[in-house]
Picture 1: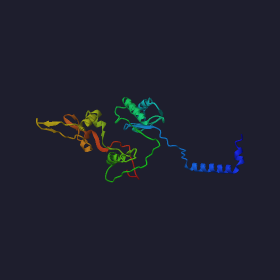
Picture 2: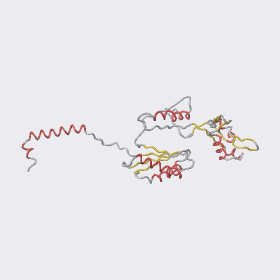
Picture 3: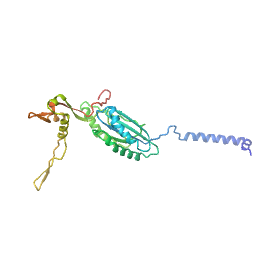
Picture 4: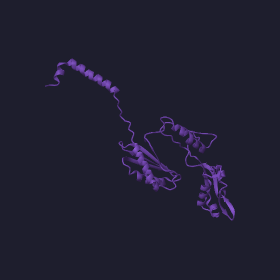
Length: 279
């Protein structure tokens, strides 16, 4: 049987059928959803840690390496990259598409806890992790400037108030604050003066930690009535630190201002942000 014979004997019907197929194909082509670059979200987790003052080599060897060793035991990792800079390091973990991101996050948290023993003891805080899409980029950047307040005050306001409010907006995935640092008091010790008074850096560190505390002071009771002793021993400005007694020599008190320069500063003096040339 010749399949082409019916179409040859009926040229008009064949022409109409062909035109109909072409017409249906043209209509279907316009409504057919085609994605040449499909949107695929790979399960990705970013881990970050900071050690203020450490060089990139130190952050890479002392922080990134122990973390990477623990992360290498997690199943389903297809790619692991790290980037170390002055005082901070970042590790990006990309998992297989079949891996559940929530389960991967739990494994990452367990690996961070396991690596804590091998991390520097003076690490200010534990490494943090978050689910992230490497292709994401900030869609809104806000710059805060002021002729009245300094940068530490602006940064403190942005991180403690503005960032918290923006995070609560529906659809906001992440809010980060940069270009500055929180307020801090900087104590620059003079080694020559310190040695002449028979003191060490450890003496200064011990005094600062003991004098700047916020602990319960106790209670006063007469058997029937009890009253709490409410005090706040925390100090936060340079002029409050300067009179602190750090030791004694020949019966005379040695104050912090005698062996060090104390000034109001920021937690990290090596970070900055500018908007049209204005900090």
